[in-house]
Image (cartoon, rainbow, N blue to C red; front, side, top):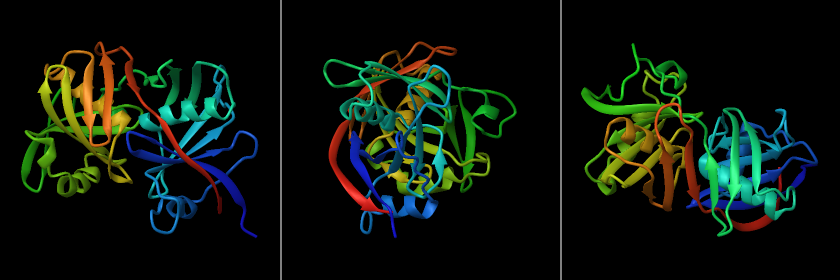
Length: 278
């Protein structure tokens, strides 16, 4: 007989999640089950599935696992991290205002603000090509990436997951649907990549759309917002902090420079709770 599990539907700026509490009862999801959950016609519908698990690393409060809509497990998700913080507080799993969480990408710290926003220490961006991973002879603020015979200047960074950022004159008309899938699976990114389309409005504000690896374009991407600010700062285009406007809303990203952690502040909201057969 199929098992029934409670879930919570949440979103961060429209980047939406199905969240499961696996702290008391373990939950092993197959790729097929994740694709079912993510399906907006036959399942619940989401960009990612999040699991809240008992801590694995010393000194942490929880472990955090993220699965994209295609069923693949990924390392990090910034909007999901904010939802994770609200979830564990709202369900009484912790009373802390600063929560230490283990992920596949390392430990992150989540700070619940009095206004309901969540501030996240997303760790130190990784800039070496091998850490992304990205095939390049040496690190640079800008690389030439050939797609369909055209060389695009891009920035590349890992936020625990791989990102490439392409500057565009107008984010509203950026060729996200066309270039996103081509760059996501570009051979210079052996583990595929999240693709950000960045419009610089001024030194403290950008517009951004992100084609996420394994999910397609989403309404918001927290790690993508961080990556865009890192690339903009490295290329001398931005100051700090930066207001990032995504289709689903705004995030505030602050980064002092190489070797320093990057900070993300934004909202997280619960939509509803339910129960589903898996």
